[in-house]
Image 1: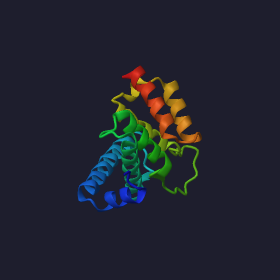
Image 2: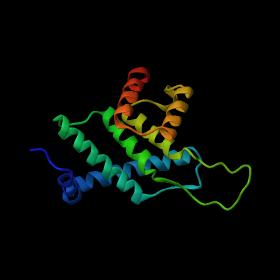
Image 3: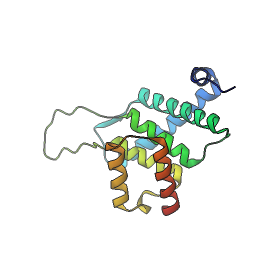
Image 4: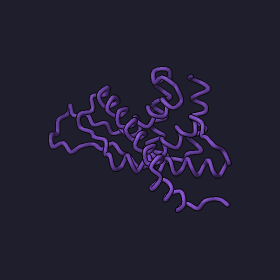
Length: 166
């Protein structure tokens, strides 16, 4: 008999090994954000830890549902990239801080969550950012920002990215 959603939720909330898995992924993403923000010189952004924890928790729940539905033990890197990207884009854990200065030189990373999600996805796919043409990066960022986020669509896009650029 298949598990019901509330069974998965209770399992992920109360199992210490699963809670540790969530904490480890959250810490990995935090380190990746810090490096990404430093590289892009984002001084007016922060990663909201509570939102990121919710993102990672939701990601693991969805991957678990996917694995049980399809009767598989492990999800591949493409599916992991797609589901994590979906939840990063839905929860938007990177926050732009309030800045009272209104100068023409002030640049806000309005696509911070989209860029970070793409960076994380490319890591899962084992693709270097500079291996992907700028036109493709621009199109993906546009899609991440303006189009509905559907994991199945992301799986297809990421499969094509992996076959083309890795």
